[in-house]
Length: 240
Image (cartoon, rainbow, N blue to C red):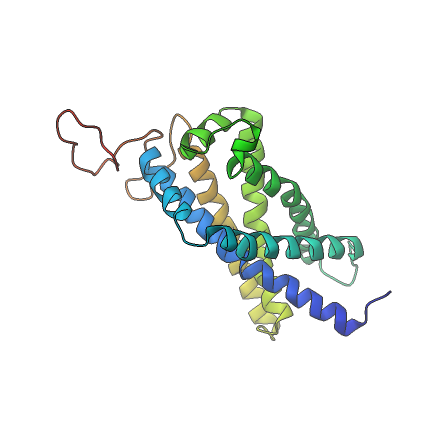
């Protein structure tokens, strides 16, 4: 049954809303947690262990992450199916952004389940989640896997940043053309910032380490204290 214009408009608003809350908030938290990899294995695993210790974690994951992402993805697939690409009534730039938003959404439809299954549920496939830093470090040694993660990070960054522009449009937050142009630029800058910091976090799992935002030098890619920390007492290893 064909949807009315009002039904279509409502679904588009709900889809854009779930892209910001709670999916966008989860993405921001995920980016911040991964950034602790710049401090080495101990700093990263400590944050992961803290998240794992949250009360009602399973319910938070189901209703705060998985269900909203599934809803967002299902509506996104329907929008892609119904989308009319290369709309001649729109400028070339808007057509390009419209197409990239759909392409990155489809890519994430495959990347996110792969990432979740091979990290959060790695034990299902004979892996270990006791040391998630070591798990990621081992995974990203494969150049093809690293390239896949770079593509996933860039896709998620663009999809979220450009999605913020769509959210503002669908919810009537921007009415003038000038405001829409300014927010479009801001949204792309947000996407760029997410992309660069996300790739930097991936590099932190490698042998060279990522670029430390404080010292602008490679951060440690293995466990141990950050450069500025005091030496550990004799005979003891650093724990943070």
